Length: 373
Image (cartoon, one colour):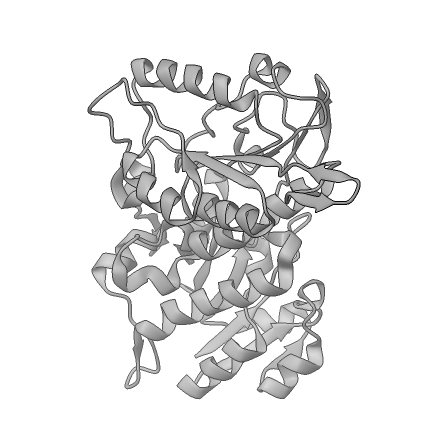
Protein backbone atom coordinates (compact mmCIF):
# COMPACT_ATOMS: atom_id res chain seq x y z
CA UNK A 1 0.00 0.00 0.00
CA UNK A 2 1.73 3.15 -1.25
CA UNK A 3 0.34 6.49 -0.07
CA UNK A 4 1.49 9.65 -1.82
CA UNK A 5 1.34 13.21 -0.50
CA UNK A 6 1.71 15.95 -3.09
CA UNK A 7 2.59 19.60 -2.73
CA UNK A 8 -0.52 21.76 -3.08
CA UNK A 9 -0.71 23.66 -6.36
CA UNK A 10 -3.75 25.89 -5.78
CA UNK A 11 -2.98 29.59 -5.47
CA UNK A 12 -2.64 30.66 -1.84
CA UNK A 13 -2.85 27.11 -0.49
CA UNK A 14 -0.25 26.72 2.26
CA UNK A 15 -1.51 23.55 3.93
CA UNK A 16 -0.30 19.99 3.48
CA UNK A 17 -2.25 16.73 3.76
CA UNK A 18 0.17 14.80 5.99
CA UNK A 19 2.31 15.60 8.99
CA UNK A 20 5.33 13.70 10.33
CA UNK A 21 3.00 12.41 13.04
CA UNK A 22 0.53 10.89 10.57
CA UNK A 23 3.34 9.60 8.34
CA UNK A 24 4.62 7.54 11.28
CA UNK A 25 1.13 6.23 12.00
CA UNK A 26 0.48 5.19 8.41
CA UNK A 27 3.84 3.39 8.28
CA UNK A 28 2.92 1.61 11.52
CA UNK A 29 -0.14 0.27 9.72
CA UNK A 30 2.12 -1.16 7.02
CA UNK A 31 1.92 1.55 4.37
CA UNK A 32 4.79 3.06 2.40
CA UNK A 33 4.70 6.86 2.48
CA UNK A 34 6.00 9.05 -0.36
CA UNK A 35 6.01 12.82 0.10
CA UNK A 36 6.77 15.31 -2.65
CA UNK A 37 9.78 17.50 -2.00
CA UNK A 38 8.77 20.80 -0.38
CA UNK A 39 5.20 19.65 0.27
CA UNK A 40 5.23 20.89 3.86
CA UNK A 41 7.45 23.94 3.49
CA UNK A 42 4.65 26.53 3.63
CA UNK A 43 3.24 24.78 6.72
CA UNK A 44 6.64 24.96 8.46
CA UNK A 45 7.39 21.26 7.98
CA UNK A 46 10.85 20.53 6.57
CA UNK A 47 11.56 17.63 4.23
CA UNK A 48 13.94 16.29 6.87
CA UNK A 49 11.04 15.91 9.32
CA UNK A 50 9.23 13.64 6.87
CA UNK A 51 12.41 11.62 6.27
CA UNK A 52 12.91 11.18 10.00
CA UNK A 53 9.33 9.94 10.24
CA UNK A 54 10.13 7.26 7.66
CA UNK A 55 8.78 8.72 4.43
CA UNK A 56 10.42 8.83 1.04
CA UNK A 57 10.86 12.48 0.05
CA UNK A 58 11.07 12.59 -3.72
CA UNK A 59 10.01 14.66 -6.76
CA UNK A 60 6.29 14.68 -7.58
CA UNK A 61 6.46 12.12 -10.39
CA UNK A 62 8.27 9.63 -8.17
CA UNK A 63 5.93 10.23 -5.25
CA UNK A 64 2.79 9.45 -7.22
CA UNK A 65 4.29 6.56 -9.23
CA UNK A 66 2.53 3.36 -8.23
CA UNK A 67 0.45 5.11 -5.56
CA UNK A 68 -2.62 3.31 -4.25
CA UNK A 69 -3.84 6.37 -2.37
CA UNK A 70 -3.08 10.06 -2.90
CA UNK A 71 -3.75 12.52 -0.08
CA UNK A 72 -4.44 16.18 -0.77
CA UNK A 73 -5.90 19.28 0.80
CA UNK A 74 -7.43 20.56 -2.43
CA UNK A 75 -7.89 17.82 -5.00
CA UNK A 76 -5.06 17.81 -7.56
CA UNK A 77 -5.71 18.00 -11.27
CA UNK A 78 -5.90 14.61 -12.96
CA UNK A 79 -2.66 15.33 -14.85
CA UNK A 80 -0.78 15.42 -11.53
CA UNK A 81 -1.85 11.82 -10.89
CA UNK A 82 -0.10 10.35 -13.91
CA UNK A 83 1.61 7.15 -12.82
CA UNK A 84 -0.76 6.33 -9.96
CA UNK A 85 -2.28 2.85 -10.00
CA UNK A 86 -5.51 2.34 -11.94
CA UNK A 87 -8.43 2.95 -9.60
CA UNK A 88 -6.25 4.77 -7.07
CA UNK A 89 -8.06 6.63 -4.30
CA UNK A 90 -7.68 10.38 -3.92
CA UNK A 91 -8.81 11.73 -0.55
CA UNK A 92 -9.07 15.52 -0.60
CA UNK A 93 -11.47 18.47 -0.70
CA UNK A 94 -13.06 18.51 -4.15
CA UNK A 95 -15.60 21.37 -4.02
CA UNK A 96 -17.63 19.21 -6.42
CA UNK A 97 -20.60 21.52 -6.88
CA UNK A 98 -18.35 24.27 -8.21
CA UNK A 99 -15.61 22.16 -9.83
CA UNK A 100 -17.75 19.52 -11.45
CA UNK A 101 -15.42 19.27 -14.47
CA UNK A 102 -12.66 18.00 -12.19
CA UNK A 103 -14.94 15.31 -10.78
CA UNK A 104 -15.89 14.22 -14.31
CA UNK A 105 -12.20 14.08 -15.22
CA UNK A 106 -11.53 11.79 -12.25
CA UNK A 107 -14.30 9.48 -13.39
CA UNK A 108 -12.95 9.41 -16.94
CA UNK A 109 -9.46 8.61 -15.65
CA UNK A 110 -10.77 5.77 -13.49
CA UNK A 111 -9.74 7.23 -10.12
CA UNK A 112 -11.84 6.93 -6.99
CA UNK A 113 -12.48 10.44 -5.70
CA UNK A 114 -13.21 10.69 -1.97
CA UNK A 115 -14.55 14.13 -1.04
CA UNK A 116 -13.62 14.83 2.55
CA UNK A 117 -16.12 17.69 2.77
CA UNK A 118 -18.91 15.14 2.24
CA UNK A 119 -18.02 13.36 5.48
CA UNK A 120 -21.35 12.73 7.25
CA UNK A 121 -21.85 14.56 10.52
CA UNK A 122 -22.38 11.51 12.68
CA UNK A 123 -20.77 10.67 16.00
CA UNK A 124 -18.27 8.12 14.75
CA UNK A 125 -17.08 10.42 11.97
CA UNK A 126 -16.40 13.47 14.14
CA UNK A 127 -12.65 12.85 14.17
CA UNK A 128 -12.69 12.67 10.36
CA UNK A 129 -14.64 15.90 9.79
CA UNK A 130 -12.34 18.28 7.91
CA UNK A 131 -14.94 21.03 7.68
CA UNK A 132 -15.20 21.23 11.46
CA UNK A 133 -11.45 21.12 12.13
CA UNK A 134 -10.72 23.81 9.56
CA UNK A 135 -13.72 25.99 10.44
CA UNK A 136 -12.72 26.01 14.09
CA UNK A 137 -9.41 27.70 13.36
CA UNK A 138 -10.98 29.87 10.66
CA UNK A 139 -13.38 31.35 13.22
CA UNK A 140 -10.45 32.10 15.51
CA UNK A 141 -8.41 33.72 12.73
CA UNK A 142 -11.36 35.85 11.59
CA UNK A 143 -11.58 37.55 14.97
CA UNK A 144 -7.82 38.13 15.17
CA UNK A 145 -7.75 39.62 11.67
CA UNK A 146 -10.71 41.88 12.45
CA UNK A 147 -9.10 42.94 15.73
CA UNK A 148 -5.90 43.81 13.88
CA UNK A 149 -7.83 45.96 11.39
CA UNK A 150 -9.96 47.61 14.09
CA UNK A 151 -8.34 50.87 15.21
CA UNK A 152 -9.32 50.50 18.86
CA UNK A 153 -8.84 48.09 21.75
CA UNK A 154 -11.09 45.07 22.30
CA UNK A 155 -11.29 44.91 26.11
CA UNK A 156 -12.46 47.60 28.48
CA UNK A 157 -9.44 49.36 29.97
CA UNK A 158 -9.47 51.61 33.01
CA UNK A 159 -6.55 54.03 33.17
CA UNK A 160 -5.67 57.21 35.03
CA UNK A 161 -6.45 59.09 31.84
CA UNK A 162 -9.93 57.58 31.53
CA UNK A 163 -11.79 54.44 30.54
CA UNK A 164 -11.68 52.71 27.16
CA UNK A 165 -14.98 50.98 26.41
CA UNK A 166 -15.03 47.34 25.32
CA UNK A 167 -15.61 46.66 21.64
CA UNK A 168 -18.98 45.23 20.63
CA UNK A 169 -18.69 42.13 18.47
CA UNK A 170 -21.62 40.49 16.66
CA UNK A 171 -21.26 36.96 15.23
CA UNK A 172 -23.74 35.94 12.54
CA UNK A 173 -23.99 32.18 12.13
CA UNK A 174 -23.27 29.91 15.08
CA UNK A 175 -21.75 26.81 13.52
CA UNK A 176 -18.26 25.59 14.34
CA UNK A 177 -16.59 28.77 13.03
CA UNK A 178 -19.13 31.03 14.72
CA UNK A 179 -18.78 29.36 18.11
CA UNK A 180 -15.00 29.70 17.96
CA UNK A 181 -15.36 33.34 16.89
CA UNK A 182 -17.58 33.98 19.93
CA UNK A 183 -15.09 32.30 22.25
CA UNK A 184 -12.13 34.18 20.77
CA UNK A 185 -13.84 37.58 20.90
CA UNK A 186 -14.80 36.91 24.52
CA UNK A 187 -11.20 36.01 25.38
CA UNK A 188 -10.08 39.30 23.87
CA UNK A 189 -12.52 41.14 26.13
CA UNK A 190 -15.25 42.21 23.71
CA UNK A 191 -18.95 42.41 24.47
CA UNK A 192 -20.23 39.61 22.24
CA UNK A 193 -23.65 38.91 20.76
CA UNK A 194 -24.61 36.31 18.18
CA UNK A 195 -27.47 35.11 16.02
CA UNK A 196 -28.39 32.08 13.93
CA UNK A 197 -31.45 30.77 12.11
CA UNK A 198 -31.37 27.64 14.28
CA UNK A 199 -33.10 28.27 17.59
CA UNK A 200 -31.20 25.38 19.20
CA UNK A 201 -28.02 27.49 19.16
CA UNK A 202 -29.33 29.88 21.83
CA UNK A 203 -28.04 27.65 24.60
CA UNK A 204 -24.64 27.38 22.92
CA UNK A 205 -24.38 31.15 22.65
CA UNK A 206 -25.32 31.61 26.29
CA UNK A 207 -22.86 28.92 27.39
CA UNK A 208 -20.02 30.97 25.91
CA UNK A 209 -21.09 34.11 27.74
CA UNK A 210 -22.52 35.91 24.71
CA UNK A 211 -25.95 37.49 24.20
CA UNK A 212 -28.28 35.68 21.76
CA UNK A 213 -30.08 37.88 19.22
CA UNK A 214 -33.06 36.01 17.80
CA UNK A 215 -36.33 36.66 16.02
CA UNK A 216 -39.11 35.88 18.48
CA UNK A 217 -42.11 37.08 16.50
CA UNK A 218 -42.03 34.34 13.85
CA UNK A 219 -42.82 30.96 15.37
CA UNK A 220 -42.18 27.44 14.12
CA UNK A 221 -39.02 28.09 12.12
CA UNK A 222 -36.10 26.12 13.43
CA UNK A 223 -33.67 26.40 10.50
CA UNK A 224 -32.16 22.99 11.21
CA UNK A 225 -31.25 21.00 8.13
CA UNK A 226 -29.72 17.56 7.75
CA UNK A 227 -26.35 16.95 9.36
CA UNK A 228 -26.57 19.99 11.60
CA UNK A 229 -26.40 22.51 8.76
CA UNK A 230 -28.68 25.48 8.44
CA UNK A 231 -31.37 25.58 5.77
CA UNK A 232 -32.84 28.47 3.83
CA UNK A 233 -35.58 30.35 5.69
CA UNK A 234 -39.03 31.50 4.63
CA UNK A 235 -39.48 35.03 3.28
CA UNK A 236 -41.37 35.94 6.47
CA UNK A 237 -38.47 34.87 8.66
CA UNK A 238 -35.87 36.50 6.42
CA UNK A 239 -37.72 39.82 6.62
CA UNK A 240 -38.02 39.66 10.41
CA UNK A 241 -34.37 38.65 10.71
CA UNK A 242 -33.25 41.53 8.48
CA UNK A 243 -35.16 44.06 10.60
CA UNK A 244 -33.69 42.69 13.82
CA UNK A 245 -30.16 42.64 12.45
CA UNK A 246 -30.46 46.16 11.06
CA UNK A 247 -31.29 47.62 14.44
CA UNK A 248 -28.55 45.63 16.17
CA UNK A 249 -25.76 45.95 13.64
CA UNK A 250 -25.77 49.74 13.80
CA UNK A 251 -24.44 49.52 17.37
CA UNK A 252 -21.61 47.07 16.62
CA UNK A 253 -17.88 47.65 16.19
CA UNK A 254 -16.99 44.21 14.79
CA UNK A 255 -19.20 41.84 12.81
CA UNK A 256 -18.16 38.30 11.86
CA UNK A 257 -20.34 36.51 9.29
CA UNK A 258 -20.03 32.74 8.90
CA UNK A 259 -23.19 31.53 7.10
CA UNK A 260 -22.83 28.84 4.45
CA UNK A 261 -25.28 26.34 2.95
CA UNK A 262 -23.56 23.32 1.34
CA UNK A 263 -23.83 23.30 -2.43
CA UNK A 264 -25.23 26.81 -2.70
CA UNK A 265 -23.96 30.37 -2.83
CA UNK A 266 -23.49 31.99 0.56
CA UNK A 267 -26.68 33.70 1.79
CA UNK A 268 -26.63 37.50 1.87
CA UNK A 269 -26.78 38.68 5.49
CA UNK A 270 -25.64 42.30 5.36
CA UNK A 271 -26.68 44.86 2.75
CA UNK A 272 -25.00 48.09 1.75
CA UNK A 273 -27.77 50.01 3.51
CA UNK A 274 -27.02 48.17 6.75
CA UNK A 275 -23.31 48.85 6.40
CA UNK A 276 -24.11 52.56 6.09
CA UNK A 277 -25.67 52.53 9.58
CA UNK A 278 -22.47 51.32 11.25
CA UNK A 279 -19.95 53.57 12.97
CA UNK A 280 -16.90 54.74 11.00
CA UNK A 281 -13.94 52.48 11.72
CA UNK A 282 -16.09 49.40 12.29
CA UNK A 283 -14.92 46.12 10.75
CA UNK A 284 -16.84 43.30 9.07
CA UNK A 285 -15.07 39.98 8.44
CA UNK A 286 -16.87 37.86 5.85
CA UNK A 287 -15.84 34.22 6.33
CA UNK A 288 -18.01 33.22 3.38
CA UNK A 289 -16.43 35.66 0.92
CA UNK A 290 -14.98 32.87 -1.24
CA UNK A 291 -18.47 31.40 -1.77
CA UNK A 292 -20.07 34.64 -2.89
CA UNK A 293 -20.06 36.41 0.46
CA UNK A 294 -22.53 37.15 3.25
CA UNK A 295 -21.78 40.86 2.91
CA UNK A 296 -22.65 43.10 -0.02
CA UNK A 297 -19.44 44.41 -1.55
CA UNK A 298 -17.01 42.00 0.09
CA UNK A 299 -14.05 40.95 -2.08
CA UNK A 300 -11.74 37.99 -1.35
CA UNK A 301 -8.33 38.98 0.03
CA UNK A 302 -9.04 42.71 -0.13
CA UNK A 303 -10.00 45.27 2.48
CA UNK A 304 -12.87 47.30 1.05
CA UNK A 305 -13.90 50.55 2.72
CA UNK A 306 -17.59 51.49 2.38
CA UNK A 307 -19.30 54.23 4.36
CA UNK A 308 -16.23 54.34 6.60
CA UNK A 309 -16.57 50.63 7.43
CA UNK A 310 -13.82 48.13 6.60
CA UNK A 311 -15.04 44.92 4.94
CA UNK A 312 -12.58 42.04 4.69
CA UNK A 313 -12.33 38.29 4.19
CA UNK A 314 -9.85 35.70 3.00
CA UNK A 315 -10.39 33.37 0.07
CA UNK A 316 -8.78 30.61 2.16
CA UNK A 317 -8.84 31.48 5.86
CA UNK A 318 -7.44 28.15 7.14
CA UNK A 319 -4.37 28.67 4.97
CA UNK A 320 -3.46 31.65 7.18
CA UNK A 321 -2.79 29.21 10.04
CA UNK A 322 -1.09 26.55 7.95
CA UNK A 323 0.89 24.74 10.65
CA UNK A 324 -2.12 24.07 12.89
CA UNK A 325 -4.73 23.56 10.18
CA UNK A 326 -2.40 21.11 8.40
CA UNK A 327 -1.86 19.14 11.60
CA UNK A 328 -5.61 18.84 12.17
CA UNK A 329 -6.41 18.06 8.54
CA UNK A 330 -3.72 15.38 8.44
CA UNK A 331 -5.23 13.76 11.54
CA UNK A 332 -8.68 13.85 9.94
CA UNK A 333 -7.31 11.91 6.96
CA UNK A 334 -5.51 9.40 9.14
CA UNK A 335 -8.55 8.90 11.36
CA UNK A 336 -10.63 8.30 8.25
CA UNK A 337 -8.39 5.74 6.56
CA UNK A 338 -7.19 3.99 9.71
CA UNK A 339 -10.77 3.45 10.92
CA UNK A 340 -11.33 1.17 7.93
CA UNK A 341 -7.89 -0.43 7.74
CA UNK A 342 -8.11 -4.15 7.05
CA UNK A 343 -4.94 -5.78 8.43
CA UNK A 344 -5.30 -8.91 6.30
CA UNK A 345 -5.85 -6.94 3.10
CA UNK A 346 -3.21 -4.38 4.07
CA UNK A 347 -5.44 -1.51 3.01
CA UNK A 348 -8.58 0.39 4.05
CA UNK A 349 -11.97 -1.08 3.13
CA UNK A 350 -14.74 1.51 3.39
CA UNK A 351 -18.20 0.72 4.71
CA UNK A 352 -21.42 1.84 3.06
CA UNK A 353 -22.46 4.62 5.45
CA UNK A 354 -19.28 6.67 5.25
CA UNK A 355 -17.84 5.25 2.03
CA UNK A 356 -20.95 5.96 -0.01
CA UNK A 357 -21.21 9.44 1.52
CA UNK A 358 -17.73 10.61 0.51
CA UNK A 359 -17.23 8.65 -2.72
CA UNK A 360 -17.78 10.72 -5.87
CA UNK A 361 -16.42 8.43 -8.58
CA UNK A 362 -15.67 4.73 -8.93
CA UNK A 363 -14.99 2.36 -11.81
CA UNK A 364 -15.08 5.16 -14.36
CA UNK A 365 -18.52 6.35 -13.23
CA UNK A 366 -19.99 9.20 -11.18
CA UNK A 367 -21.54 7.44 -8.17
CA UNK A 368 -22.39 10.27 -5.75
CA UNK A 369 -26.14 10.63 -5.31
CA UNK A 370 -25.65 14.24 -4.18
CA UNK A 371 -24.15 15.11 -7.55
CA UNK A 372 -26.61 13.08 -9.57
CA UNK A 373 -29.61 14.86 -8.10
